[in-house]
Length: 195
Image (cartoon, rainbow, N blue to C red; front, side, top):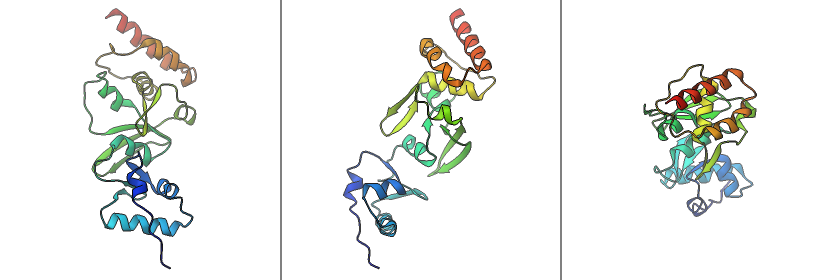
């Protein structure tokens, strides 16, 4: 059966840089799965689409790695050490991208390591302290700080000067009255106040 190739211009005009198979199927408004598969295969073969891993594609090699992170396992958002490092709260730089997701897993895609850390569904789907940046969700500094405390009994932060403590105490209740966390937050806050 001959397929009708879908237009690559629909993809090139799209604001996303990363596409799942489902994204392409919906963008092309296709009713035939095989037709979408054939079109994807054609565009990969001709170099007009870049295959990152099974079911995940980019317009070219200059895609946004944070956008890729949240496409690999979804729902997800960029958080933890990635945000804390970018904000100067921890000084150690990691080559991995740290992502909150529904399962813990390390995945290497296109020579980039992604560390997915599991959060319970009620946290993962709560948007407090999560902002949309471009085509991906990312934790605010305060949300990333709390996410790290949620998963770690002890953690060393290099600088707490950029943290807005009012926002910390506003977001803290979404962690379900976790007494260990509340105690840690208060300890870090008191330590920060004492200088």
